Image 1 (tube, rainbow over the protein chains, first blue to last red):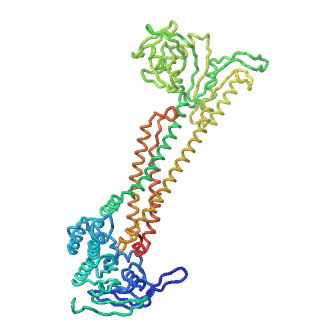
Image 2: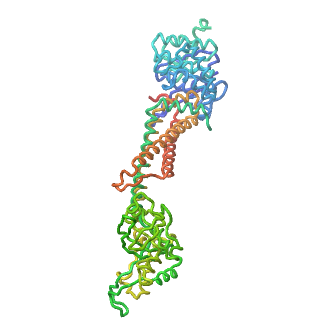
Length: 230
Length: 409
Protein backbone atom coordinates (compact mmCIF):
# COMPACT_ATOMS: atom_id res chain seq x y z
CA UNK A 1 0.00 0.00 0.00
CA UNK A 2 2.73 2.43 1.01
CA UNK A 3 6.26 1.75 -0.14
CA UNK A 4 9.13 4.08 0.60
CA UNK A 5 12.68 3.61 -0.67
CA UNK A 6 15.66 5.68 0.45
CA UNK A 7 13.58 8.72 1.19
CA UNK A 8 15.43 11.95 1.87
CA UNK A 9 14.02 15.30 2.92
CA UNK A 10 15.70 18.45 4.09
CA UNK A 11 14.40 21.91 4.89
CA UNK A 12 16.34 25.06 4.16
CA UNK A 13 17.22 26.88 7.34
CA UNK A 14 18.75 30.17 6.37
CA UNK A 15 22.04 29.39 4.63
CA UNK A 16 22.18 25.80 5.78
CA UNK A 17 19.64 23.10 5.31
CA UNK A 18 18.23 20.80 7.93
CA UNK A 19 18.43 17.17 6.88
CA UNK A 20 15.31 15.69 8.45
CA UNK A 21 14.83 12.33 6.76
CA UNK A 22 18.00 10.43 5.95
CA UNK A 23 17.22 7.57 3.63
CA UNK A 24 14.11 5.90 4.98
CA UNK A 25 12.89 2.51 3.77
CA UNK A 26 9.42 1.48 4.81
CA UNK A 27 6.78 -0.83 3.42
CA UNK A 28 3.27 -0.83 4.77
CA UNK A 29 0.89 -3.43 3.44
CA UNK A 30 -2.81 -3.14 3.04
CA UNK A 31 -4.76 -3.58 6.25
CA UNK A 32 -1.87 -2.83 8.57
CA UNK A 33 -2.15 -0.69 11.69
CA UNK A 34 1.19 1.05 12.00
CA UNK A 35 2.47 3.52 14.57
CA UNK A 36 5.39 5.79 13.88
CA UNK A 37 7.09 6.64 17.19
CA UNK A 38 9.69 9.21 17.92
CA UNK A 39 10.45 12.25 19.94
CA UNK A 40 9.92 15.69 18.47
CA UNK A 41 12.46 16.42 15.80
CA UNK A 42 12.81 12.78 14.87
CA UNK A 43 11.19 13.43 11.51
CA UNK A 44 7.94 11.58 12.10
CA UNK A 45 5.68 14.48 11.16
CA UNK A 46 7.73 15.12 8.05
CA UNK A 47 7.30 11.50 7.10
CA UNK A 48 3.55 11.71 7.56
CA UNK A 49 3.37 14.88 5.47
CA UNK A 50 5.23 13.23 2.65
CA UNK A 51 3.15 10.07 2.88
CA UNK A 52 0.05 12.26 3.03
CA UNK A 53 1.11 14.16 -0.10
CA UNK A 54 1.02 17.35 1.91
CA UNK A 55 4.70 17.90 1.25
CA UNK A 56 7.16 16.73 -1.35
CA UNK A 57 10.35 14.70 -0.88
CA UNK A 58 13.83 15.38 -2.18
CA UNK A 59 15.24 11.95 -3.01
CA UNK A 60 14.10 8.35 -3.06
CA UNK A 61 10.92 6.72 -4.26
CA UNK A 62 7.45 6.74 -2.83
CA UNK A 63 4.77 4.41 -4.11
CA UNK A 64 1.18 4.97 -2.99
CA UNK A 65 -1.18 2.16 -3.90
CA UNK A 66 1.42 0.96 -6.37
CA UNK A 67 1.68 4.35 -8.04
CA UNK A 68 5.04 6.12 -8.10
CA UNK A 69 4.64 9.61 -6.71
CA UNK A 70 6.77 12.07 -8.64
CA UNK A 71 6.42 15.46 -10.25
CA UNK A 72 3.21 16.01 -8.42
CA UNK A 73 1.60 19.35 -8.97
CA UNK A 74 -0.87 20.68 -6.48
CA UNK A 75 -3.84 19.61 -8.50
CA UNK A 76 -2.76 16.00 -8.91
CA UNK A 77 -1.78 15.85 -5.26
CA UNK A 78 -5.19 17.17 -4.27
CA UNK A 79 -6.96 14.55 -6.36
CA UNK A 80 -4.80 11.73 -5.00
CA UNK A 81 -5.31 12.91 -1.42
CA UNK A 82 -9.00 13.00 -1.98
CA UNK A 83 -9.08 9.55 -3.52
CA UNK A 84 -6.64 7.56 -1.41
CA UNK A 85 -6.06 9.34 1.89
CA UNK A 86 -8.01 10.32 4.95
CA UNK A 87 -6.51 12.65 7.53
CA UNK A 88 -6.93 12.89 11.27
CA UNK A 89 -5.04 15.74 12.89
CA UNK A 90 -3.98 16.47 16.45
CA UNK A 91 -5.89 19.76 16.38
CA UNK A 92 -8.92 18.17 14.63
CA UNK A 93 -8.90 20.78 11.84
CA UNK A 94 -12.63 20.93 11.51
CA UNK A 95 -14.02 23.95 9.70
CA UNK A 96 -15.45 26.04 12.49
CA UNK A 97 -18.49 27.39 10.69
CA UNK A 98 -19.65 24.03 9.39
CA UNK A 99 -21.71 21.52 11.35
CA UNK A 100 -20.41 18.03 12.06
CA UNK A 101 -22.25 16.50 9.13
CA UNK A 102 -21.11 19.27 6.78
CA UNK A 103 -17.51 18.75 7.83
CA UNK A 104 -17.78 15.04 7.15
CA UNK A 105 -19.38 15.74 3.77
CA UNK A 106 -16.71 18.21 2.63
CA UNK A 107 -14.26 15.72 1.06
CA UNK A 108 -17.23 14.23 -0.80
CA UNK A 109 -17.98 17.70 -2.19
CA UNK A 110 -14.48 17.77 -3.65
CA UNK A 111 -15.18 14.36 -5.14
CA UNK A 112 -18.06 15.94 -6.99
CA UNK A 113 -20.84 13.99 -5.33
CA UNK A 114 -24.37 15.32 -5.25
CA UNK A 115 -25.68 17.02 -2.16
CA UNK A 116 -28.13 14.33 -1.16
CA UNK A 117 -25.60 11.57 -1.57
CA UNK A 118 -23.03 13.51 0.43
CA UNK A 119 -25.49 14.01 3.25
CA UNK A 120 -26.36 10.32 3.29
CA UNK A 121 -22.77 9.11 3.33
CA UNK A 122 -21.76 11.69 5.92
CA UNK A 123 -24.57 10.63 8.21
CA UNK A 124 -23.64 6.98 7.75
CA UNK A 125 -20.09 7.64 8.92
CA UNK A 126 -21.20 9.89 11.76
CA UNK A 127 -23.40 7.02 12.85
CA UNK A 128 -20.38 4.75 12.63
CA UNK A 129 -18.43 6.95 15.06
CA UNK A 130 -21.50 7.19 17.29
CA UNK A 131 -22.30 10.85 16.69
CA UNK A 132 -25.37 10.71 14.51
CA UNK A 133 -27.33 12.68 17.12
CA UNK A 134 -24.70 15.45 17.05
CA UNK A 135 -24.79 15.78 13.28
CA UNK A 136 -26.07 19.34 13.26
CA UNK A 137 -23.81 20.70 15.97
CA UNK A 138 -20.96 23.07 15.25
CA UNK A 139 -17.45 21.97 16.28
CA UNK A 140 -17.54 24.55 19.09
CA UNK A 141 -20.49 22.69 20.59
CA UNK A 142 -18.64 19.36 20.67
CA UNK A 143 -16.16 17.99 23.17
CA UNK A 144 -12.57 17.22 22.13
CA UNK A 145 -13.28 13.51 21.81
CA UNK A 146 -16.37 14.18 19.76
CA UNK A 147 -14.47 16.54 17.47
CA UNK A 148 -11.86 13.89 16.84
CA UNK A 149 -14.57 11.35 16.10
CA UNK A 150 -16.04 13.74 13.57
CA UNK A 151 -12.56 14.09 12.07
CA UNK A 152 -12.27 10.28 11.87
CA UNK A 153 -15.66 10.12 10.18
CA UNK A 154 -14.48 12.78 7.72
CA UNK A 155 -11.29 10.79 7.04
CA UNK A 156 -13.39 7.71 6.32
CA UNK A 157 -16.07 9.41 4.25
CA UNK A 158 -14.31 9.02 0.90
CA UNK A 159 -13.53 5.38 1.68
CA UNK A 160 -9.80 5.96 1.31
CA UNK A 161 -6.99 3.39 1.11
CA UNK A 162 -5.11 4.77 4.09
CA UNK A 163 -6.09 6.80 7.13
CA UNK A 164 -3.25 9.02 8.31
CA UNK A 165 -3.48 10.12 11.92
CA UNK A 166 -1.05 12.73 13.21
CA UNK A 167 -1.01 12.56 17.02
CA UNK A 168 -4.75 11.83 16.99
CA UNK A 169 -4.87 11.72 20.78
CA UNK A 170 -2.40 14.50 21.42
CA UNK A 171 -5.07 16.95 22.49
CA UNK A 172 -7.26 14.48 24.38
CA UNK A 173 -7.36 13.12 27.92
CA UNK A 174 -6.67 9.44 28.46
CA UNK A 175 -10.31 8.27 28.57
CA UNK A 176 -11.24 9.97 25.31
CA UNK A 177 -7.87 8.93 23.85
CA UNK A 178 -8.82 5.34 24.45
CA UNK A 179 -12.20 5.74 22.79
CA UNK A 180 -10.60 7.33 19.72
CA UNK A 181 -8.02 4.53 19.58
CA UNK A 182 -10.81 1.98 19.87
CA UNK A 183 -12.45 3.62 16.90
CA UNK A 184 -9.23 3.46 14.88
CA UNK A 185 -8.83 -0.19 15.83
CA UNK A 186 -12.38 -0.86 14.72
CA UNK A 187 -11.84 0.60 11.30
CA UNK A 188 -8.55 -1.26 11.01
CA UNK A 189 -10.38 -4.46 11.83
CA UNK A 190 -12.68 -3.73 8.93
CA UNK A 191 -9.64 -3.74 6.66
CA UNK A 192 -8.54 -0.13 6.56
CA UNK A 193 -4.83 0.65 6.56
CA UNK A 194 -4.18 3.00 9.47
CA UNK A 195 -1.00 4.99 9.90
CA UNK A 196 -0.64 6.71 13.25
CA UNK A 197 2.03 9.09 14.40
CA UNK A 198 2.53 9.41 18.11
CA UNK A 199 5.08 9.94 20.82
CA UNK A 200 3.02 8.11 23.44
CA UNK A 201 4.08 4.55 24.17
CA UNK A 202 0.65 3.37 25.30
CA UNK A 203 -0.97 4.65 22.13
CA UNK A 204 1.66 2.96 19.95
CA UNK A 205 1.21 -0.22 21.96
CA UNK A 206 -2.39 -0.49 20.75
CA UNK A 207 -1.28 -0.83 17.12
CA UNK A 208 0.05 -3.87 15.29
CA UNK A 209 3.41 -2.54 14.26
CA UNK A 210 5.66 0.11 15.76
CA UNK A 211 8.26 1.88 13.69
CA UNK A 212 10.67 3.94 15.77
CA UNK A 213 12.31 6.95 14.26
CA UNK A 214 15.29 8.85 15.58
CA UNK A 215 17.15 11.69 13.88
CA UNK A 216 15.69 10.85 10.52
CA UNK A 217 16.44 7.14 10.46
CA UNK A 218 14.44 4.07 11.43
CA UNK A 219 15.98 2.52 14.51
CA UNK A 220 13.49 -0.32 14.97
CA UNK A 221 10.51 -1.86 13.25
CA UNK A 222 8.62 -4.49 15.27
CA UNK A 223 5.27 -6.21 15.18
CA UNK A 224 3.22 -6.25 18.40
CA UNK A 225 -0.04 -7.70 19.71
CA UNK A 226 -0.51 -9.44 16.40
CA UNK A 227 -2.14 -12.47 17.91
CA UNK A 228 -4.35 -10.38 20.20
CA UNK A 229 -5.89 -8.14 17.60
CA UNK A 230 -5.94 -10.47 14.65
CA UNK B 1 -20.60 27.71 -14.93
CA UNK B 2 -23.56 27.85 -12.60
CA UNK B 3 -22.79 25.27 -10.00
CA UNK B 4 -25.43 25.19 -7.29
CA UNK B 5 -23.19 23.32 -4.90
CA UNK B 6 -20.41 25.81 -5.25
CA UNK B 7 -22.84 28.68 -4.64
CA UNK B 8 -24.09 26.85 -1.55
CA UNK B 9 -20.53 26.69 -0.28
CA UNK B 10 -20.10 30.38 -0.99
CA UNK B 11 -23.37 31.42 0.62
CA UNK B 12 -22.49 29.41 3.67
CA UNK B 13 -19.05 31.00 3.88
CA UNK B 14 -20.64 34.44 3.50
CA UNK B 15 -23.42 33.97 6.00
CA UNK B 16 -21.30 32.23 8.61
CA UNK B 17 -18.56 34.85 8.47
CA UNK B 18 -20.56 37.99 8.92
CA UNK B 19 -17.77 40.27 10.11
CA UNK B 20 -15.65 39.41 7.13
CA UNK B 21 -18.52 39.89 4.72
CA UNK B 22 -19.56 43.12 6.42
CA UNK B 23 -16.03 44.51 6.25
CA UNK B 24 -15.54 43.93 2.57
CA UNK B 25 -19.11 44.89 1.76
CA UNK B 26 -18.90 48.07 3.81
CA UNK B 27 -15.73 49.22 2.06
CA UNK B 28 -17.30 48.85 -1.34
CA UNK B 29 -20.66 50.30 -0.32
CA UNK B 30 -19.03 53.26 1.34
CA UNK B 31 -16.73 53.97 -1.59
CA UNK B 32 -19.62 53.82 -4.04
CA UNK B 33 -21.83 55.88 -1.74
CA UNK B 34 -19.17 58.59 -1.42
CA UNK B 35 -18.51 58.46 -5.13
CA UNK B 36 -22.21 58.85 -5.90
CA UNK B 37 -22.69 61.68 -3.41
CA UNK B 38 -19.61 63.63 -4.52
CA UNK B 39 -20.39 63.14 -8.16
CA UNK B 40 -24.02 64.03 -7.61
CA UNK B 41 -23.24 67.19 -5.66
CA UNK B 42 -20.71 68.17 -8.30
CA UNK B 43 -23.41 67.72 -10.89
CA UNK B 44 -25.72 69.79 -8.69
CA UNK B 45 -23.23 72.66 -8.87
CA UNK B 46 -23.06 72.22 -12.61
CA UNK B 47 -26.84 72.33 -12.88
CA UNK B 48 -26.85 75.62 -10.96
CA UNK B 49 -24.48 77.18 -13.45
CA UNK B 50 -26.39 75.79 -16.37
CA UNK B 51 -29.56 77.28 -14.96
CA UNK B 52 -27.95 80.68 -14.44
CA UNK B 53 -27.36 80.83 -18.15
CA UNK B 54 -30.53 79.11 -19.27
CA UNK B 55 -32.63 82.28 -19.50
CA UNK B 56 -31.84 82.82 -23.13
CA UNK B 57 -30.54 80.59 -25.81
CA UNK B 58 -26.85 79.91 -25.30
CA UNK B 59 -26.17 80.96 -28.88
CA UNK B 60 -28.00 84.29 -28.79
CA UNK B 61 -26.63 87.53 -30.16
CA UNK B 62 -28.39 90.85 -29.47
CA UNK B 63 -27.57 93.96 -31.49
CA UNK B 64 -28.47 97.42 -30.18
CA UNK B 65 -27.81 100.82 -31.62
CA UNK B 66 -27.05 104.10 -29.92
CA UNK B 67 -25.25 107.39 -30.53
CA UNK B 68 -21.79 107.55 -32.03
CA UNK B 69 -19.07 108.59 -29.62
CA UNK B 70 -16.37 109.28 -32.20
CA UNK B 71 -16.35 111.43 -35.30
CA UNK B 72 -15.72 109.33 -38.42
CA UNK B 73 -15.35 110.08 -42.11
CA UNK B 74 -16.34 113.68 -41.58
CA UNK B 75 -19.38 112.79 -39.56
CA UNK B 76 -19.75 114.23 -36.10
CA UNK B 77 -19.96 112.25 -32.91
CA UNK B 78 -23.28 112.05 -31.11
CA UNK B 79 -25.04 110.96 -34.28
CA UNK B 80 -27.96 108.60 -33.70
CA UNK B 81 -27.66 105.21 -35.44
CA UNK B 82 -31.02 103.74 -36.38
CA UNK B 83 -31.48 100.15 -37.61
CA UNK B 84 -34.00 99.75 -40.39
CA UNK B 85 -35.57 96.87 -42.32
CA UNK B 86 -32.69 96.94 -44.78
CA UNK B 87 -30.32 96.06 -41.93
CA UNK B 88 -32.33 92.91 -41.35
CA UNK B 89 -32.13 92.06 -45.01
CA UNK B 90 -28.43 92.93 -45.15
CA UNK B 91 -27.56 90.64 -42.29
CA UNK B 92 -29.66 87.75 -43.54
CA UNK B 93 -28.11 88.04 -46.99
CA UNK B 94 -24.53 88.21 -45.76
CA UNK B 95 -24.72 85.55 -43.10
CA UNK B 96 -27.21 83.04 -44.38
CA UNK B 97 -25.16 80.11 -43.13
CA UNK B 98 -24.26 81.50 -39.73
CA UNK B 99 -27.69 82.68 -38.67
CA UNK B 100 -30.15 80.17 -37.25
CA UNK B 101 -33.03 82.31 -35.97
CA UNK B 102 -33.43 86.01 -36.63
CA UNK B 103 -35.88 88.58 -35.40
CA UNK B 104 -35.90 92.36 -35.54
CA UNK B 105 -37.58 93.80 -32.51
CA UNK B 106 -39.61 96.81 -31.45
CA UNK B 107 -40.11 97.34 -27.77
CA UNK B 108 -42.58 99.55 -25.90
CA UNK B 109 -43.80 99.83 -22.38
CA UNK B 110 -47.61 100.06 -22.33
CA UNK B 111 -50.52 100.03 -19.97
CA UNK B 112 -52.49 96.84 -20.61
CA UNK B 113 -56.08 96.41 -19.50
CA UNK B 114 -58.35 93.40 -19.28
CA UNK B 115 -61.76 94.17 -17.80
CA UNK B 116 -61.05 95.68 -14.36
CA UNK B 117 -57.39 94.62 -14.17
CA UNK B 118 -54.56 96.66 -15.57
CA UNK B 119 -50.80 96.80 -15.39
CA UNK B 120 -47.76 98.15 -17.22
CA UNK B 121 -45.89 95.65 -19.37
CA UNK B 122 -43.11 95.57 -21.92
CA UNK B 123 -44.59 94.88 -25.34
CA UNK B 124 -42.30 93.48 -28.00
CA UNK B 125 -42.98 93.33 -31.69
CA UNK B 126 -41.13 90.28 -32.96
CA UNK B 127 -40.98 87.57 -35.60
CA UNK B 128 -41.93 83.96 -34.79
CA UNK B 129 -38.19 83.22 -34.67
CA UNK B 130 -38.04 85.13 -31.43
CA UNK B 131 -39.56 82.26 -29.47
CA UNK B 132 -36.52 79.94 -29.62
CA UNK B 133 -34.30 82.98 -29.08
CA UNK B 134 -35.85 83.60 -25.70
CA UNK B 135 -36.22 79.89 -24.97
CA UNK B 136 -39.89 80.64 -24.40
CA UNK B 137 -42.14 77.59 -24.11
CA UNK B 138 -45.77 77.76 -25.13
CA UNK B 139 -47.97 76.26 -22.43
CA UNK B 140 -51.34 77.20 -23.92
CA UNK B 141 -52.45 78.19 -27.41
CA UNK B 142 -49.71 79.14 -29.88
CA UNK B 143 -46.93 81.63 -30.51
CA UNK B 144 -47.04 84.24 -33.27
CA UNK B 145 -47.04 82.92 -36.83
CA UNK B 146 -45.78 84.24 -40.16
CA UNK B 147 -49.39 84.67 -41.17
CA UNK B 148 -49.79 87.09 -38.26
CA UNK B 149 -46.72 88.98 -39.53
CA UNK B 150 -48.10 89.12 -43.05
CA UNK B 151 -51.58 90.20 -42.00
CA UNK B 152 -50.28 92.58 -39.31
CA UNK B 153 -52.74 90.83 -37.06
CA UNK B 154 -53.60 92.36 -33.72
CA UNK B 155 -52.74 89.27 -31.76
CA UNK B 156 -50.51 88.72 -28.74
CA UNK B 157 -48.70 85.94 -26.93
CA UNK B 158 -48.52 86.79 -23.24
CA UNK B 159 -46.23 85.59 -20.47
CA UNK B 160 -47.48 83.25 -17.82
CA UNK B 161 -47.39 86.01 -15.20
CA UNK B 162 -49.30 88.42 -17.44
CA UNK B 163 -52.08 85.86 -17.61
CA UNK B 164 -51.90 85.44 -13.85
CA UNK B 165 -51.95 89.22 -13.20
CA UNK B 166 -54.81 90.05 -15.53
CA UNK B 167 -56.87 86.90 -15.74
CA UNK B 168 -56.30 85.30 -12.35
CA UNK B 169 -57.11 81.65 -12.64
CA UNK B 170 -58.89 82.04 -15.99
CA UNK B 171 -57.30 81.22 -19.33
CA UNK B 172 -56.16 84.22 -21.35
CA UNK B 173 -56.30 82.46 -24.71
CA UNK B 174 -59.03 83.84 -26.95
CA UNK B 175 -59.64 86.91 -24.77
CA UNK B 176 -59.08 90.45 -25.95
CA UNK B 177 -56.74 92.73 -24.06
CA UNK B 178 -56.56 96.47 -24.46
CA UNK B 179 -53.10 97.91 -24.99
CA UNK B 180 -53.27 101.72 -24.89
CA UNK B 181 -56.59 101.84 -26.66
CA UNK B 182 -56.05 99.09 -29.19
CA UNK B 183 -57.54 95.67 -28.70
CA UNK B 184 -55.37 92.58 -29.20
CA UNK B 185 -56.51 88.97 -29.16
CA UNK B 186 -54.45 86.66 -26.95
CA UNK B 187 -53.46 83.59 -28.99
CA UNK B 188 -51.08 81.93 -26.56
CA UNK B 189 -49.47 81.87 -23.12
CA UNK B 190 -45.81 81.03 -22.69
CA UNK B 191 -43.45 80.38 -19.83
CA UNK B 192 -39.76 81.18 -19.88
CA UNK B 193 -36.93 79.57 -17.92
CA UNK B 194 -35.35 83.03 -17.73
CA UNK B 195 -37.50 83.89 -14.72
CA UNK B 196 -40.26 86.31 -13.68
CA UNK B 197 -39.15 89.25 -15.82
CA UNK B 198 -39.17 87.17 -18.96
CA UNK B 199 -42.65 85.92 -18.10
CA UNK B 200 -44.08 89.47 -17.98
CA UNK B 201 -43.48 90.18 -21.65
CA UNK B 202 -46.17 90.42 -24.28
CA UNK B 203 -45.22 89.50 -27.84
CA UNK B 204 -47.05 90.89 -30.85
CA UNK B 205 -46.27 90.61 -34.58
CA UNK B 206 -43.32 92.81 -35.53
CA UNK B 207 -45.16 94.30 -38.51
CA UNK B 208 -48.15 95.21 -36.37
CA UNK B 209 -45.96 97.07 -33.92
CA UNK B 210 -43.85 98.70 -36.61
CA UNK B 211 -46.86 99.90 -38.54
CA UNK B 212 -48.59 101.22 -35.48
CA UNK B 213 -45.86 102.83 -33.41
CA UNK B 214 -42.90 103.50 -35.70
CA UNK B 215 -42.88 106.22 -38.28
CA UNK B 216 -41.49 104.05 -41.08
CA UNK B 217 -39.20 101.03 -41.26
CA UNK B 218 -37.30 101.57 -38.03
CA UNK B 219 -36.14 98.73 -35.81
CA UNK B 220 -35.29 99.05 -32.11
CA UNK B 221 -32.88 96.18 -31.89
CA UNK B 222 -32.16 92.83 -33.43
CA UNK B 223 -31.96 89.41 -31.85
CA UNK B 224 -30.56 86.35 -33.54
CA UNK B 225 -29.07 83.01 -32.78
CA UNK B 226 -26.05 81.67 -34.56
CA UNK B 227 -25.88 78.23 -36.06
CA UNK B 228 -25.34 75.90 -33.09
CA UNK B 229 -22.83 73.93 -35.13
CA UNK B 230 -20.42 76.83 -34.81
CA UNK B 231 -17.79 76.45 -32.12
CA UNK B 232 -17.54 79.16 -29.50
CA UNK B 233 -14.52 80.64 -31.27
CA UNK B 234 -16.24 80.54 -34.65
CA UNK B 235 -19.28 82.19 -33.11
CA UNK B 236 -17.14 84.97 -31.65
CA UNK B 237 -15.45 85.45 -35.01
CA UNK B 238 -18.86 85.62 -36.66
CA UNK B 239 -20.15 88.30 -34.30
CA UNK B 240 -16.94 90.30 -34.68
CA UNK B 241 -17.29 90.25 -38.44
CA UNK B 242 -20.96 91.13 -38.15
CA UNK B 243 -20.11 94.11 -35.94
CA UNK B 244 -17.43 95.28 -38.33
CA UNK B 245 -19.73 95.11 -41.34
CA UNK B 246 -22.57 96.86 -39.56
CA UNK B 247 -20.20 99.63 -38.47
CA UNK B 248 -18.98 99.97 -42.03
CA UNK B 249 -22.52 100.08 -43.33
CA UNK B 250 -23.48 102.83 -40.91
CA UNK B 251 -20.19 104.73 -41.20
CA UNK B 252 -19.21 104.16 -37.61
CA UNK B 253 -15.63 104.27 -36.43
CA UNK B 254 -14.50 100.64 -35.92
CA UNK B 255 -13.33 101.63 -32.42
CA UNK B 256 -16.64 103.23 -31.50
CA UNK B 257 -18.14 101.13 -28.74
CA UNK B 258 -21.38 103.12 -28.30
CA UNK B 259 -23.04 103.33 -31.69
CA UNK B 260 -23.51 99.65 -32.43
CA UNK B 261 -23.39 97.25 -29.55
CA UNK B 262 -23.30 93.52 -30.19
CA UNK B 263 -23.77 91.26 -27.20
CA UNK B 264 -22.78 87.69 -27.97
CA UNK B 265 -23.80 85.12 -25.36
CA UNK B 266 -21.00 82.93 -26.65
CA UNK B 267 -18.60 85.08 -24.63
CA UNK B 268 -20.39 84.17 -21.45
CA UNK B 269 -20.70 80.63 -22.68
CA UNK B 270 -16.97 80.51 -23.16
CA UNK B 271 -16.36 81.62 -19.57
CA UNK B 272 -18.95 79.19 -18.29
CA UNK B 273 -17.47 76.40 -20.36
CA UNK B 274 -14.06 77.08 -18.88
CA UNK B 275 -15.48 77.18 -15.40
CA UNK B 276 -17.36 73.94 -16.05
CA UNK B 277 -14.19 72.36 -17.35
CA UNK B 278 -12.40 73.20 -14.10
CA UNK B 279 -15.40 71.96 -12.13
CA UNK B 280 -15.47 68.75 -14.16
CA UNK B 281 -11.78 68.15 -13.63
CA UNK B 282 -12.30 68.73 -9.93
CA UNK B 283 -15.20 66.28 -9.81
CA UNK B 284 -13.30 63.66 -11.77
CA UNK B 285 -10.31 64.14 -9.49
CA UNK B 286 -12.39 63.69 -6.36
CA UNK B 287 -14.24 60.73 -7.85
CA UNK B 288 -11.01 59.05 -8.90
CA UNK B 289 -9.61 59.66 -5.43
CA UNK B 290 -12.64 58.02 -3.87
CA UNK B 291 -12.37 55.08 -6.23
CA UNK B 292 -8.67 54.63 -5.53
CA UNK B 293 -9.33 54.80 -1.79
CA UNK B 294 -12.02 52.16 -2.27
CA UNK B 295 -9.72 49.95 -4.30
CA UNK B 296 -6.99 50.19 -1.67
CA UNK B 297 -9.55 49.43 1.02
CA UNK B 298 -10.92 46.36 -0.70
CA UNK B 299 -7.40 45.15 -1.50
CA UNK B 300 -6.37 45.35 2.14
CA UNK B 301 -9.47 43.55 3.23
CA UNK B 302 -9.01 40.79 0.67
CA UNK B 303 -5.48 40.23 1.94
CA UNK B 304 -6.81 40.08 5.50
CA UNK B 305 -9.62 37.73 4.52
CA UNK B 306 -7.36 35.29 2.76
CA UNK B 307 -4.90 35.43 5.64
CA UNK B 308 -7.71 34.70 8.06
CA UNK B 309 -8.83 31.76 5.97
CA UNK B 310 -5.38 30.25 5.46
CA UNK B 311 -6.05 27.40 7.83
CA UNK B 312 -9.50 26.67 6.43
CA UNK B 313 -8.01 26.63 2.95
CA UNK B 314 -5.31 24.24 4.19
CA UNK B 315 -7.97 21.91 5.55
CA UNK B 316 -9.86 22.07 2.28
CA UNK B 317 -6.70 21.28 0.38
CA UNK B 318 -5.88 18.34 2.65
CA UNK B 319 -9.37 17.03 1.94
CA UNK B 320 -8.83 17.24 -1.79
CA UNK B 321 -9.54 20.80 -2.92
CA UNK B 322 -7.50 21.68 -5.99
CA UNK B 323 -5.78 25.08 -6.15
CA UNK B 324 -8.20 26.19 -8.85
CA UNK B 325 -11.22 25.35 -6.77
CA UNK B 326 -9.73 27.39 -3.91
CA UNK B 327 -9.07 30.39 -6.16
CA UNK B 328 -12.48 30.05 -7.76
CA UNK B 329 -14.23 29.93 -4.41
CA UNK B 330 -12.51 33.05 -3.07
CA UNK B 331 -13.00 34.97 -6.28
CA UNK B 332 -16.67 34.12 -6.63
CA UNK B 333 -17.25 35.02 -3.05
CA UNK B 334 -15.49 38.34 -3.45
CA UNK B 335 -17.27 39.16 -6.71
CA UNK B 336 -20.62 38.33 -5.19
CA UNK B 337 -20.03 40.40 -2.07
CA UNK B 338 -18.56 43.38 -3.89
CA UNK B 339 -21.29 43.38 -6.54
CA UNK B 340 -24.06 43.21 -3.97
CA UNK B 341 -22.43 45.80 -1.73
CA UNK B 342 -21.61 48.03 -4.67
CA UNK B 343 -25.19 47.91 -5.82
CA UNK B 344 -26.55 48.74 -2.38
CA UNK B 345 -24.07 51.61 -2.06
CA UNK B 346 -25.20 52.86 -5.42
CA UNK B 347 -28.86 52.66 -4.48
CA UNK B 348 -28.21 54.34 -1.15
CA UNK B 349 -26.33 57.13 -2.89
CA UNK B 350 -29.00 57.63 -5.52
CA UNK B 351 -31.75 57.73 -2.91
CA UNK B 352 -29.74 60.12 -0.76
CA UNK B 353 -29.30 62.43 -3.73
CA UNK B 354 -32.99 62.18 -4.52
CA UNK B 355 -33.79 62.98 -0.90
CA UNK B 356 -31.50 66.02 -0.99
CA UNK B 357 -33.24 67.12 -4.17
CA UNK B 358 -33.38 70.88 -4.42
CA UNK B 359 -33.14 71.46 -0.66
CA UNK B 360 -29.56 72.71 -1.00
CA UNK B 361 -30.44 75.26 -3.63
CA UNK B 362 -29.14 78.13 -1.51
CA UNK B 363 -25.74 76.43 -1.52
CA UNK B 364 -25.85 76.48 -5.31
CA UNK B 365 -26.72 72.80 -5.59
CA UNK B 366 -29.68 72.04 -7.81
CA UNK B 367 -30.98 68.56 -8.53
CA UNK B 368 -27.83 66.67 -7.53
CA UNK B 369 -27.85 63.47 -9.54
CA UNK B 370 -25.58 61.07 -11.33
CA UNK B 371 -25.75 59.47 -14.70
CA UNK B 372 -26.44 55.78 -14.22
CA UNK B 373 -23.62 54.72 -16.50
CA UNK B 374 -21.11 56.65 -14.42
CA UNK B 375 -22.01 54.90 -11.18
CA UNK B 376 -22.48 51.51 -12.78
CA UNK B 377 -19.08 52.02 -14.39
CA UNK B 378 -17.56 52.91 -11.05
CA UNK B 379 -19.16 49.87 -9.43
CA UNK B 380 -17.80 47.63 -12.16
CA UNK B 381 -14.34 49.13 -11.72
CA UNK B 382 -14.49 48.44 -7.99
CA UNK B 383 -15.68 44.89 -8.57
CA UNK B 384 -12.87 44.28 -11.02
CA UNK B 385 -10.44 45.84 -8.57
CA UNK B 386 -11.85 43.67 -5.78
CA UNK B 387 -11.51 40.63 -7.98
CA UNK B 388 -7.91 41.37 -8.86
CA UNK B 389 -7.21 42.27 -5.27
CA UNK B 390 -8.79 38.97 -4.24
CA UNK B 391 -7.03 36.98 -6.94
CA UNK B 392 -3.49 37.78 -5.85
CA UNK B 393 -3.81 36.63 -2.23
CA UNK B 394 -6.10 33.76 -3.32
CA UNK B 395 -3.46 32.56 -5.73
CA UNK B 396 -0.87 32.83 -3.00
CA UNK B 397 -3.07 30.97 -0.54
CA UNK B 398 -3.70 28.26 -3.10
CA UNK B 399 0.01 27.81 -3.66
CA UNK B 400 0.90 27.59 0.05
CA UNK B 401 1.72 24.01 0.89
CA UNK B 402 -1.25 22.56 2.77
CA UNK B 403 1.03 21.60 5.59
CA UNK B 404 2.08 25.21 6.11
CA UNK B 405 -1.51 26.38 5.87
CA UNK B 406 -2.63 23.76 8.38
CA UNK B 407 -0.09 24.99 10.90
CA UNK B 408 -1.30 28.57 10.54
CA UNK B 409 -2.98 29.76 13.68
